[in-house]
Image (cartoon, rainbow over all chains, first blue to last red; front, side, top):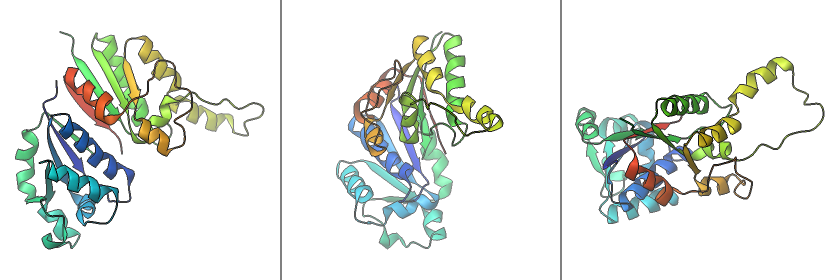
Length: 110
Length: 132
């Protein structure tokens, strides 16, 4: 049985895989699995609040106490200020990512 | 001791070797006596539907055919089910591709991420996602 899971999204908002990563996180969170959703690389662009599925799902996930993270260095690389991303997203340093991942039984990249 | 492997396959045939890798991994696990569950997600759902065979001249060279044909996983997926694998799809992703009403490869079943996939998590020891 998988009790904890991390979904890592590195694809931008226009790529289906980013939506599938968010959808998967929503599903496992709703199912009672300890779920972490992490955005890195170009995936951080999913957090800008663009109208549509990504923002709606992320907002709902965080309202339901889902844990959403993004990598500080990825934001900087994409020149996105922390004040521009969705409220509730936890910004972490890349150095902190390994510890976060080690807490999960499985890590799946989208 | 028998374990259970769950594969979330995100790629379809031909686009890369993810499907072939996943099927080979599943075959190896089954041969070792382990259980296998496969969730077809994203382009992976294209593998779940029976092929529409074309009649007449294919207008494809034998050399190219020999490159393409081994990437098709339809029959090998059905064979996995016969060996005991459990395979289901994301019907929403099927719908997005306009193939939801088409007939499934033998043994492959309708599914969804919220229930079918999450139910896999209840019984699996290992989850791997395969995609690009």
